[in-house]
Image 1 (spheres, rainbow, N blue to C red):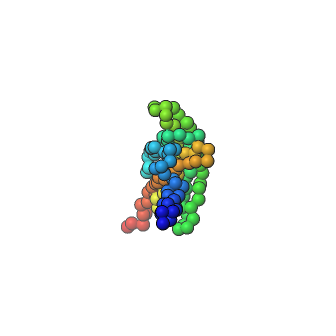
Image 2 (cartoon, helix red, strand yellow; image 1 turned 90 degrees about the vertical axis):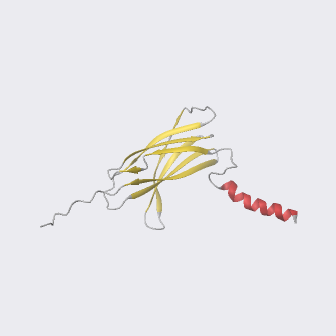
Length: 142
């Protein structure tokens, strides 16, 4: 019976060890700063800063959903390594340029922040909204 409990505990623990943001992993993202998270219809630049315990590389994957089951990675931006205030940590910075929105509905982009080291990684998800184009006034008033 003791072996069964150990096996059951292992089976329950394995998904936890493989998930992103695992609290038992030494390597993890500590903080992410994204500004702004809302842009006007003209689009613009979004600044991204990431701090992690370790890492060789950091990037932002920009994803957009097209219809219910379809989402695509539009592009990726590699972040630049910068000196961290705490030398035991790693930091990256970069910017993402989002295009104008000429449509009548807001466009929501998913930002997936990835930090990688060898075969290990951690990631976080954020949303950035590009507002709909302003509605033009109707010219049919009498």
